[in-house]
Image (cartoon, rainbow, N blue to C red; front, side, top):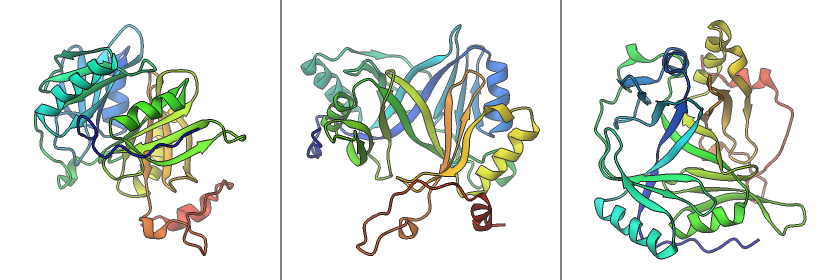
Length: 300
């Protein structure tokens, strides 16, 4: 179970996770959930797709809901540092024998589509059509008040192979778990932008996206989301939570959209407030959720 040295000088430079492109069977129902209930900003609507963004995002979209006969995920997109990085990425894929091609995506510049070593569709882009930041347009804040995309969490049949590839192209591990015998990786969290993770891999049937993680500004929007979904016909779409992760200490709520695509609303305490032992090391635990204590932390 080798944890490798991070590659600080990869062949091309990835900045962060940028979008998830979902396949949906009923766009009107998807719009009712994502826009009307969760409060996503609708940047553009066509007969075949919805393009959504969070309140503080300045790009055209971080979520694409694309009309399809079958639900699924068309790809997870990552922003690169420059136009040259797209060409460098294509050369790197060619040298590795990785399937790749340049494709057209609405509101984006050149986009490189690849299939990673375990079969996960991944896209890289540099340019995206700009959009207005809505962070200070308080009258437009609705539902979950989602600020931005945070991460993508994927199931993979081979965590080591997935980790090795993304480590080689510059992702750095922040946390990992292993099997009881210590011989194999069970899950790993990796980042580019300096957060807990842009991308995570967990052992399971796949490759497939388990969920897209999105960031909210505090605990309050997560509690409010539960109230909204419970009173607008979407109660069954709450999959798990609210609760708090042991590894990242993030407060979370897992949801499923009408096509069972996964979304995680998350918010973290400042690192200075994370639980630590006397030695200074992070204290990880699994405990029964004390909802009353969590509600007492809520800022009114």
